Length: 67
Image (cartoon, rainbow, N blue to C red):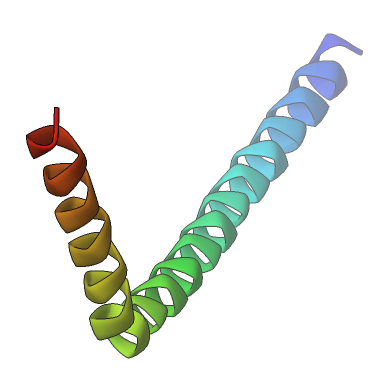
């Protein structure tokens, strides 16, 4: 009787470990996909973002120098 319980517990632990590994791989793939998309967007919009920050920087410099 106790051997059956131990055997079933071992089987359950093996299945649980397998699912954790699978979940980790899935999260890693999702993270990699999000990273690729974010990098692609930044490359595509890089000059526009740089222009916006340059404008903000010059406006802040102008506001700081007028006081």
